[in-house]
Length: 190
Image 1: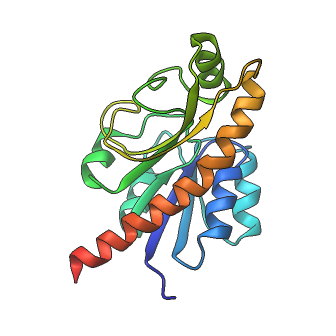
Image 2 (image 1 turned 30 degrees about the vertical axis):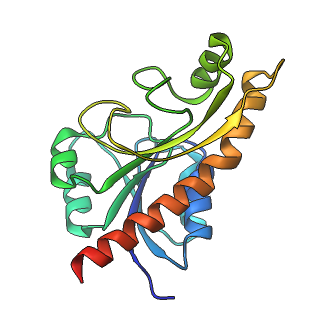
C-alpha cells in the first residue's frame, strides 16, 4: 500500500507512543522527524534506532522553521508536555493531533497528564475512562474530539492499573485515527 502521507511527531518522554506509531504505521505513513523538548528523553534513542531525524526544541525557535520546511501532512503530539505554539496551531490548523489518556472533555486541561489523569479518574469514582484523539487548538485538550475508546474502571483499581488499561487502547486508537485523517486528506485533494 502506498504511503498516505508524512507525519512529524512531538514527544517529551520515553517514547512508547512514538515507537508504536513509527513501527505499526509504516505501511501508511512516513515519520519525517521527531521534535523533542528534552535533550535526555528516551524517545530520542528510539528515533535514532529507527533512523528518524531528531529536532531539539530550543528557545531560539529555529525548530519552527524546520517544521515549516518539512511541511508534514500531520503533526502528532505523543506525550508532548508543552502547549503547542499558537502560531503553529494557525499554520497547521486542522492538521495537529493529540492523544489524551482520558475521555475528554472530562479530565483534560492544565495539570491533567500522565498519572495525574488516572489518579483524578479513580478519585472521582468514574466507572469509565479511556483515550481521546483530538485536534489541537489554542487551548489545552479543548480541540474537536476525533475518536475515543473506553475502558472500565474496576472496583479497587489503582492509577497504575488504569494507566495500563488506557495505554492498551490509546496507541491503536491513535494509529487508526491518524490513518483515517490521512485518508480523508487524500480524498479531499483528489
